[in-house]
Length: 433
Image (cartoon, rainbow, N blue to C red; front, side):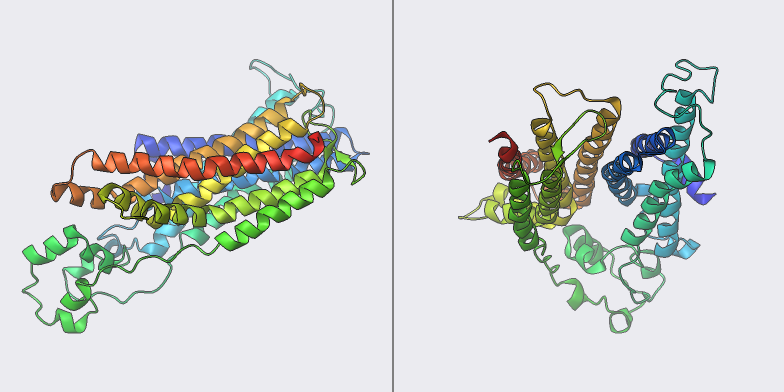
């Protein structure tokens, strides 16, 4: 009930994100049910049904990734001062986040079931009754346990992944004193906050005179508070991602030979696509996702090279700090973009006949990738709100944060744009040679 109340009283922007998660889950659930309908209509051709079910993995993975990102940026379930005193510690908030994610995804799955039954003709009284009865096995009874099992995959995986990602990373010592009991317990790193200008000002203006022995009792003494925050190390996935890119391209090159293997007919109109080329692109996409954080961190270092000024220094440091937050969504967007180019290029014919299911799956994957990147960018901006406010208090120009944001966007586009275009061209080159 608490999770339902928090979901109902959230900000309209947060509600919009949850509705987008519901829409993505509905699209993925409808694709899963269409695979089930194909299996019912073609009981003697299980290979085609298995292929359609396998191609639902990409929309399902994109939907789960988007749902976890939305849950991570939900302000209603973020630890805040004083929540531990009323029984809402980090563990309880993780449970609330998982339940909220389950509510959004279950609603999408139910909508997908209703729409599927409506197109089959099982539900009447609305427009387009039974519009797709011939391809959804309307003459055969729908096995409800199988349909519910398919529809429960995305909510179960999204909720479990949310709980796993948002779980408390470690156990911290309980603060001492009535004031610290409601400030930093189980919410954020007190060292990093106290080292910021806002934290230092608070400790200078409001000294704790009630408990003079707090420095000796708790690990938050003046000496520790004056230490600067430890910079985050560079992400370690760059070597693996760089190694995965040539492997995927090599597999796609070998599979592109005319006698390398048979083709695969994709659901929705793409026919005779070499299976090895598609597998090579999957390896290449995995390499882009793994290399995204490392490339973002490297871009931040390059911005600070050769005697940087205040603008380049600020943009580079923020990119290094947000490398893990926005690097992986950037890699996903690059992988989806290159994959869409490869699918269109490798399709048979100059103008392939693209079916509605292919369009729906492509829209779900691309939409989730772009929305995940946008959500991560908003999260990064909110994470640096205190730094921006401190810079403005110190007398920095008001346009400095905006110029730094534009510089970061331009630098990322200059790095990831040519990389995506090169990977797409190399992956699509063998069959067109």
